[in-house]
Image (cartoon, rainbow, N blue to C red; front, side, top):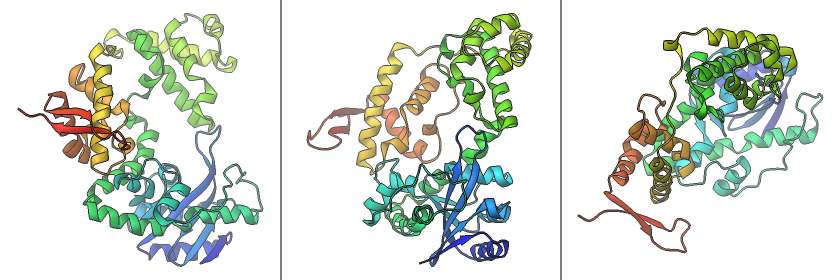
Length: 392
């Protein structure tokens, strides 16, 4: 297969023209994300059926034309763990990928473990060995070495073959629609995370929020949103602006002047004035504008979460699904809280959407009602439990 490093704009335009006429291509990226709010894109690798390309944005400048093709939905874009590629697409042109196929997700939907690394997935599905890793390399340095390019091309070399095999398995199991739902979720996760209006209440997920009162929660929400804006403005990671535990401690103490803000351990000195300004605005909110306090879980919730997680693992094994792809423990907890505690206080669980709501949730509901029992089957099996309908 021919391999091309693309650094000239004429060559880049030719590649884009070729890609725009194809039905599919593979995609991977190399970037530097540490300490940044917006990652620095350093290389884009593309695989077609007859060639591999490495587009160099440091030489070419904007790759908007390429990202427009990715977002168009005219081609299937094959990725592995495509959250990063989706985010880079959205940051580049304000649109998510139009039609993704994520081989890591597809593997979980046909019974392979989730998440599998690219190398393990290639080995499991194709019986091939991926070349030596260069994950610690600095992709911003030029010129790129031969080993770097070899590694970069390896990351897309097998994507289309994986696509062929996994498409066949999805088709055999009748899970093509499930896969399309999951791929859309991967593609749109980036714009949901970057769009302030669609993020929900991520500040509630910080450790220690369950013990805060309404005014303290208002302070935490304001501090969190200020940190996100500052991270975006300075292109720094949010935690490098101010650590999570410091935000929670400021909200807990509700300091009444700049000196008290400065006295909280870990507060960055350069932001003392700003932090106090944000806190004062939160203090001025009327009572009806304060966030709702979410009650702690009643004792039965934790026990039921563990029970339902065992049920879900058993059901997933029987259905040739990766349990980790179906739902996590927090997903189960969120659904239980909505069902048993405060339906309006939690965002919907992934279990309440799409194919999970059709196929998985009815079984979990029956488990809660005692219509299914969970017992020990064959001890030598990887999932030794049995899930059976209760005899009436």
